[in-house]
Image (cartoon, rainbow over all chains, first blue to last red; front, side):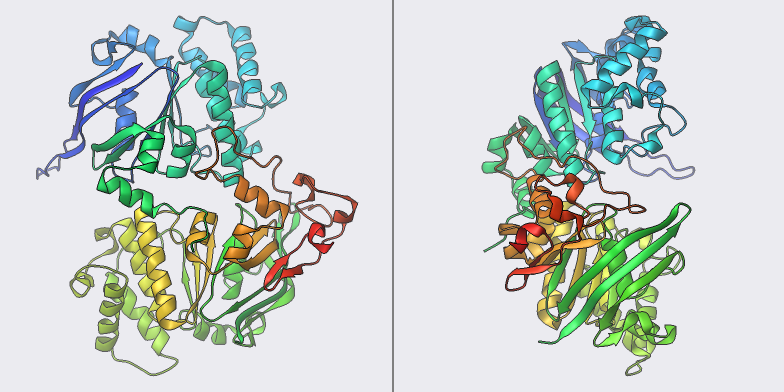
Length: 263
Length: 325
């Protein structure tokens, strides 16, 4: 479904008077995500995870390399085709406190993508509200929540609203950028279970970004480890966690604080 | 061994526009030298306020200590004059906070900030010269694993990475050789590999100096890996406490069990994770009795009275009617 070939992203840092050397955030990254699977991208801060996400969303343009979505090179799409495609790739952001506009009601937050994509989705106002109510029910919220505002919800509920907003255009690929890092473990468990459940029901493909290895191990079929812009290892989750090949993967796994009493 | 820190029946109220929230509801905790206590719980359970109370850093008002005592080396911290407290802070009780970027002054050199703390700590015991304090600062930086420590004393905080800044803060907390270190989420902002380094460093300092640590965290993995004891907090109460091996291996309180079941460990199959239904109680009007009862699968009539903490095994205390039987 999603195929990335030899992706490199270099940022040119222009000083006003002085040229600083460019930073290569991603170097020759290649990976592919199959339909219906959960693909995990792991890496420490500064490894290039978010840059890769921004390239997939076309919020940043790759310096070289290609990103193919369902076989089509995203860089070659016409602006109209790209707009059409954006409805099919949606994103859930890390911080449910920062990613919801506090002045918008849940109804307006969840229906906004439908307004933006009305040309391709073509729902009228009533249709949009009905769709929003249906999606909210899928993430475990009710129609009574439509006219409330973000501050009235707990962190876990806010992240459900963020997920509802991402699902409302009926995307096929969901990009999840640290969706549970801001949540407590009990709430994280609820959100993770919701994601597992939604994937089973809607046949979604997940591109899951996290620095939390235990979350990745729980939710992903395959994993890639990004280190300083380079993918050092990728493969099935069980293989990576049970028999890591690369030294960096082993170091990372050894540092992972497992809830097991030593000795 | 005698206790270094004893918290007895601590009740803390917090004034808000809607009334007084009962944020600490009778905390009992005893920490001895050489012990590393993990204080765990979810957002808003009062773990940070417990830590701040030990060096009386909770502003009153809006907070109000309604009852209880905090004895540090036998002296009641809550009854102490401010001048006496100042001798305690930094010298006897070191503190590390979560965010290494906001806790260093960006406009002063790392070395000067460390030297200031060292001089302040030494003022109440043996006086030392500025040059000696600078030597000490370099030694501390070296000890926390900063390469070329002496040459980095003249650097500013922005020249350090996040992990290194957190190590500078640890050096700063330890430079006065405190007997108790309160570390409030010291590794939450750090990558796992840096987190492992920081925790190993703390462990080393405990082994070397016999210092006691109160490690406030929401990460039970960190507790399992680096603490000797753990106190589990829920909505202002310590619901379970004891040695890590007791509490993590054989949790007795339903909340501790639920918290452990919510962690995606190696053995949990996808979709089999146990979330915890409901949400934390409103502390303006907490449920009478056990505050966990509304979310507890084992709740019964007896839970309407706050359950006393009972010892189920030596050192392992549980505040639940299930443990009373």
